[in-house]
Length: 201
Image 1 (cartoon, rainbow, N blue to C red):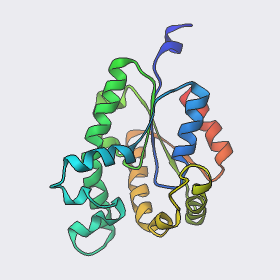
Image 2 (cartoon, one colour; image 1 turned 90 degrees about the vertical axis):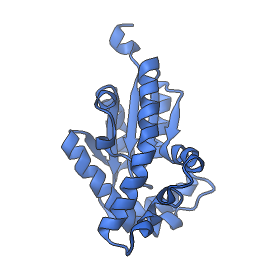
Image 3 (cartoon, one colour; image 1 turned 90 degrees about the horizontal axis):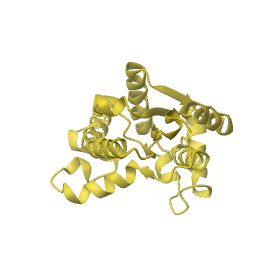
């Protein structure tokens, strides 16, 4: 086995709910033999009790705009980015630890903001973004996900917030373009997961 085969695979997967982050993360982990798969949602739950003074962090991301007045595209985005700024401190720390240890890891997260990540982190990981361009397909995937990955979490609650989530998605896609990060359109799940597997290999 040569050195390139021995190198750790540290993969950061972004996307809003319902685009296939959890399913594809699990698939990659199985195919690549990666034992550590983490979710940004769990990082957020870990951080919340440590920052009780941060009101914007104590609510669901789709309600974070309420800290800033009336709901507009700008306040929805501001709530998302303010939550992301805190969560991504933890994301940086986790990724730096994996890099330092030479440990393979997949981290999937809604809070995919490359400008929040340190340059030496971005240069040592494989970041990618998953999205679904068609809103109705995205909504249907959310409503079906309880059958596959989130067994006690009906997707309707999140599907009802999809317009807010898609504001976040479009911002992350702009960041992908700015940083030259590959974004995968996932209307065809089986095709996309193979494309992503080839890409991360």
